[in-house]
Length: 406
Image 1 (cartoon, rainbow, N blue to C red):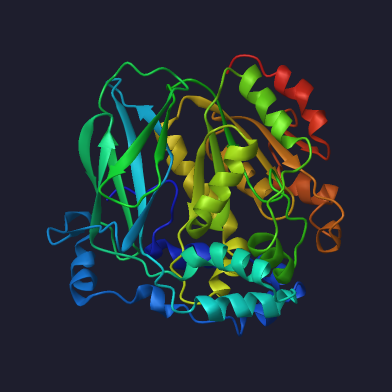
Image 2 (tube, rainbow, N blue to C red):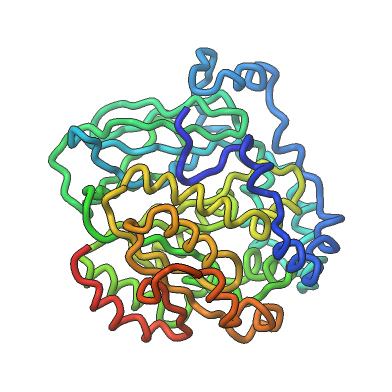
């Protein structure tokens, strides 16, 4: 089965969760292990019928699948980007996540844990906000299920889902008269599901890969309690000047396709999609698979193995768009410089520019992650005209304008 660009399968989790030495030092200094050690168990997410459990091992070839029930189940259809194969035909990977409605037995316990960890005031509004964002992290996943999709007038089956409650199908898109940058919307049939937007991108031109937290969305904390606070209680806020910069990129570079690459778990998809829709150009959200059985896995997702994860996802995008020229935009809080540098060394003709936002005002970061030595080491051997570290988005307008044809 083809690996989805938006998710990382559970069998890859051990490799991608392996801490690097600097991640271990950072997590220890910020006391992540202390915060994680007593976070609630979420094993109820993986309690499903014996039939679904056994047949899910068959993956996409499972003949014993069930259709989703709109009364009891819900499905997320992930936005995607269509590409052209060598014959010029359009294809895309269609990823769906399947859940049982309101099945999170551990929701109240998880909400109480978050409130206790961050020291929030316990009131109805705070509890409701946390519960809404936590619900997809505690609801039971649904393996061995399918959903029917109306794909440009053609009834198409997605799935069946695997043991992680996710299906991934690489499918031809009916029709051929699509234009670069065109967006079409598909809807599920007889299912409680989100809509899916497919963006069409021709083989050549500019493209953008962007990090999310502290690149386009404000986090400005390196502590586990700070991350929990911004994720589960606060309204998401864009980084000042970045929405305008991204609109400038869209206008100046002829509406390039965007990928938003984050180490956040896919369970935050609706939350992050809504934020992106409010402030930034349309694009595919690439999020991390969440196979962990404890809420502590949420913090581990964000802080362990992020470089390996991001490079693996960029490799997949490269397979589909090897002739596009990419602008990679990230920040200094985690491993964006090292991830983009590794990708440049693998595919130097593929990346035309790397822009790293220096995140200042965060004590845990200023001491080591913002030093000139860190950036010089990360980009060692990479031409100086390729990478640039900025603090104010206004610094990038002239650089974008000077990029010219890819």
